[in-house]
Image (cartoon, rainbow, N blue to C red):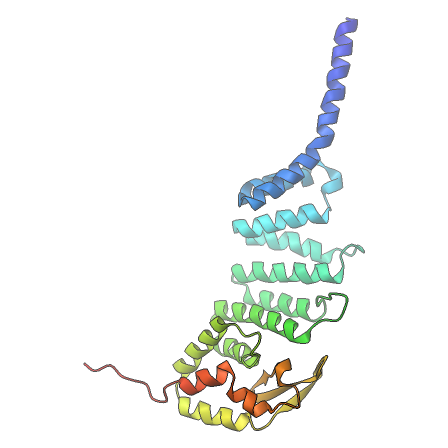
Length: 270
């Protein structure tokens, strides 16, 4: 009888030691499953942690992993529910940069689910109230470029061509940072609208008048811009004085693209 009691005691001790390690195992397995793109398994592992271990119920890392797995698996409502909870967290660990990241993930989830107004709201929220801070002064041009790219994705998915065009135009003269793919998108939109001759004349006039945005100050001064198609087209840091901005604009990829557009559509002969 004494032997049986000892064996049961040793088994209990062994079981408890294993149980203490299980929470870490589930956490690691959830991460490994996510990396391997096994999102359903990652969801299972993280949900088990939250359900069976009270200390992980409000753990930000576990909830974030769960939300990301939901997002990648296409469970957008579940993903938004998790990240809304993280966004509402008022603990000191929920810093502005974390809220910035959470807001952008929420924007992505809403965009994927077709809820474009909510997606736009969280982009604006993340890039204004909860803007990212690197601790040593942000590059306003880089932040504008990132925000604009996010908005372009939403407007493109929404089918709002006019808003998409305005965002594409906004940074089309940021020569150092404008992706060729975005220039191609803008070219397609401008060609579909027609009246290229008028566009060329309008740009030539607009480029004669360079303004400065008193709300956007960089290390080099206030950000200059021109007004074209009722849109502020910002000029990057390479346009700062004493350089001739008009000459630089004529050397830009946008200007070359615009001038290369055919002024009359070519009809196929039958």
